[in-house]
Amino acid sequence: MSLHAHGLSHLELGFITNTCMDSNRANISSYTKGQVAVTFQQSITQPAQKG
Image 1: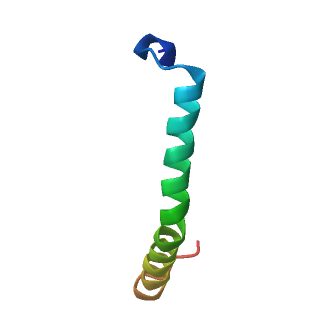
Image 2: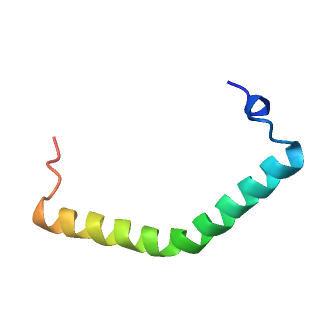
């Protein structure tokens, strides 16, 4: 499926992409910290079985 079918120019597409990237960049640190915390808790409560 082509994005051009939606009538987006390269400039508009670039602006939308940059906007999404900026918002993702702002959220990535807190998201990563949350994922690390969850993984850490799981490793404590549910130790991986080594086989």
